[in-house]
Image (cartoon, rainbow, N blue to C red; front, side):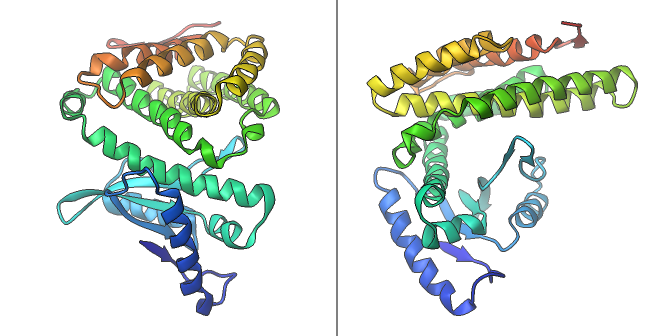
Length: 310
């Protein structure tokens, strides 16, 4: 279940002991989770290279992981086919392994939560696979704006439900970081504005622009979804106090309507998950994504993409 590369910082003789310790941790974290889809947990020596090579090998259109001013991916769960059966492989940075076994305090707890988070993704993928009618309809969608919205909606909901499950291994005091929120809201606004200028100056075409818009706004909405999920996973008293403070803070920003719409959509969907039967059920979340794009002055539809100055 655990695969560890030869790590630059660690003598090879310790690898087997490290595996044993991680297996104990995984067994503890796995209580209540369905991990039947888990292929194995992989700690590569070079995380970014391993992810990229795997994506190319599997013919996955996504390339690489987030690693920029607003965040770094420390773990990723990727679906693959093994002997005709769909499985999930978890990739984790070696720093997670080292902090789990040798770290202490905040860094160790964050690493524990990262591992827990990825295990919860495997459980969530099991739940998704069991919604046969929903998945069949989702797979039938043609390559249009609707399929784009469906893909984003599913990714965003996943980053709500998984943190909600994994919050038990997170320090509640670290859920809300208003400085980080202010930075990512500002960063997204500036980056989208830059991309609009690039398009208007002829540096990129409309399709490249729309791809960049999706990447940046999706990251922002996933951050929002993670916070909402973690708030919904902690005690109601603590959630209420934190949420009131957060609502007040985000109300100062242009994106605030999207925040409130997102909260409402995610919580409504959570009431019926994992028993969705038709794609229409995720419509409120798709509307929220469209509203976010509109907030930045971008209006895509089946006929094309319009950019209006805000």
